Length: 163
View 1 (cartoon, rainbow, N blue to C red):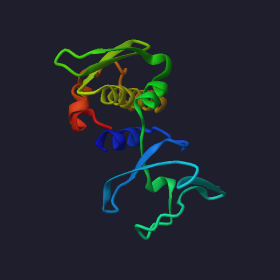
View 2: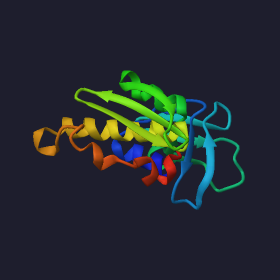
View 3: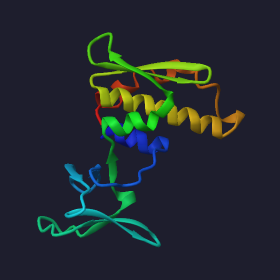
C-alpha cells in the first residue's frame, strides 16, 4: 500500500475499470483488497463524481464510497502502460529482484525492487514527480536528472516496492 499511496500523492490519476484492484484505507479494512466488476463492485457516475458501489455486499455496513476514498492498486501491466514510451527496459536486478530503466530528456534512471511491479511503480513515482516539478516552472526544482540520487532506494523506502 505505501507504493500505491506514493503514486497517488505523485499525481497518478485513476479511471476505474473492471478488474482494477483497490483498498479502502483508514476504515479498518486496509488488508481487504477489492476488485471492480460489473456485478458486485462497480463504478457509478454522478454529476458530483464517481462512486464505487458494493452491490449485494452484506458482510459490512458498506453500500458505496467515493472514488477519492479508494486507493487504486495498479497492476504490473497498468504501471508499464502508464510509463509509456519512457520505459526502456525491465531486467534482473543486481541483488536479485528486478530493475526498470526509464528515459526522460536529459535523464536515464534505473529503479531496483524485489518484484517487477515495485520497480515499475518506483519508476512511475519518479517520472510523475519529475513532470510535476517541470510543470511548476524553474523555481520548483532542478533538472530531473540533477537530483537522481535523491530518489535512490525509493522502492526500499516504499515497503520494498510492493504495490
